[in-house]
Length: 419
Image (cartoon, rainbow, N blue to C red; front, side, top):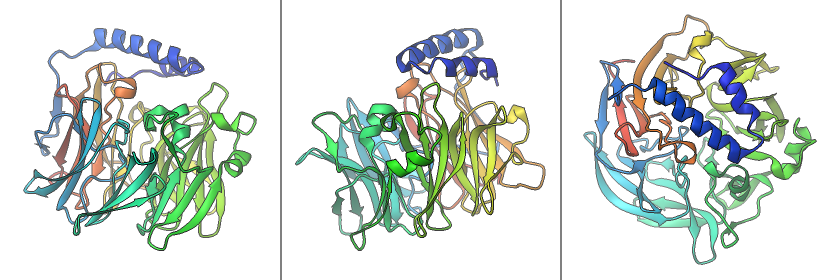
């Protein structure tokens, strides 16, 4: 695994003051690195006990790593299909590892390649997604019911849902279009959304706002408070699977900015900062009060555990070795809470790695290389295709998006004989 070293990552960070310059220099360096490290003819390598399921659907992807494309009863599957400049959200029947088109839910030119239109299952028969209502050019969300083929529009876009699936959590996506377009919707002067000053929670069942967490309150607690609020980003809201709380990233991408992880319990209006430093990236819950996250701590970068039970402590027990923490990735926990799946960004050979590890804080970690996937250089920057590994509800498969065939496609990997 030919990863970029600490010096290379440090230099990359130093030029982030200019996003345009950073993207151009980064791409040039990746091209040179690949020239000297490419593995001719390599596309994919899988664990001998696993099996890749190819749906043979071209230009498809599901999206982010924190939600599954498959309904809890394993009967339905969601994925995006890209045609020219438009995206289609398709609902499929899932049976015997095959997909049969059931309904085209949406066609839109407003989406992003990280999350698509952010589809999230609410129950076996309902899911939510974002779209621009062309009647008033507003970014909103809609609940689709499979049983009666109906749509219920909500006047706010969705970022996350609560563990009980009754509260929609929403943010200001127009801010992301300005600061981090990878997660925006290409909103412009003609497209807008309901004004949200921070993060709000809305109970769509009884039509009541549950909480409002303002940007001003968030900024006041931040080490970024000396920097302009408008230059700070709220992103990656993840709701706890255990209670009425969630975490989110608050960061300023400038050279003097901080990357922070906030925790908010909306039952008791408790807001606190769990982490503030140079890097906070991707994360998931591994226990009720412990988060597994990729971050920088005491000069080391890698996956750490953040325990916030009584006080806040940061440890590195699950992946304690430096060699296991050479690349950022997207972690998620299996339905039985025994395993963690995570990927890596492409290395110098443009190969992404996929690992399964034991969710065990006390014993020697068991780490399994599930697969290696080639990512052509044309899939970089905004156009990148991360593996974004996601567990299926039954725990037998890993859902990924990959470009190892030279085109964006969504797959399943059968891991039932490994774990």
